[in-house]
Length: 242
Image (cartoon, rainbow, N blue to C red; front, side):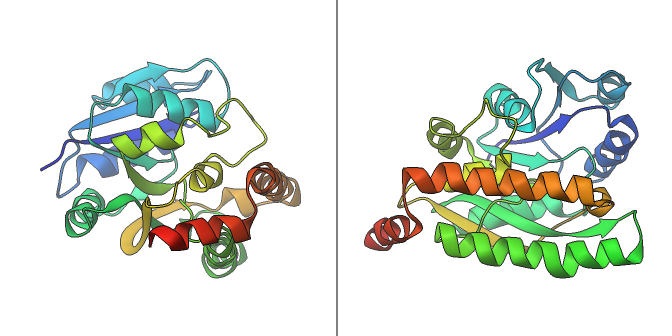
């Protein structure tokens, strides 16, 4: 079995992180490493991570992209599994990660989906039935492969070394998971695995301002990467290596 490291960026999410780490402690396939990246938190996030036995990496440069990069760079695993602090993985989550890569040795990354908790019924329905299907459908058309979903994905360490070279890791105005999705080169396979499942907070859909920021980051991310290469050119290059 390949060594499997779990990376969780956190910023002032101590309560949510405690729930996430508790879910990781109950995995049918335990993690070989759990790395919590403290992204300049001012709450008890680092203490919660230490108490759960996780390794804490400090990344003072704010931003999910920077924090994720610091965690991936520090992780010793051959497979790097990514959660958000408010993700609650199913008990077989790591088993599904391992099984997906085992069944598909050609895969560079695997991503899954989510249900939403918290908020109200409309917000949870919107996340599950509108936001995620639209994200996977629209971005999949642009990319020529499934996009990574930041609350629930895993990537091989050698693939990370490739995609990090062109990712916009120093920008606060991009979606880190979508930006990484654009960096997969022809011949690198990204799988969508419905069995790879987490629950995640519905708080991004709690208000227009939060949703507006999310949409703008998506627009900026797409624009930055489409300026490098058009979707048509990207899909053509991928087709040549299929």
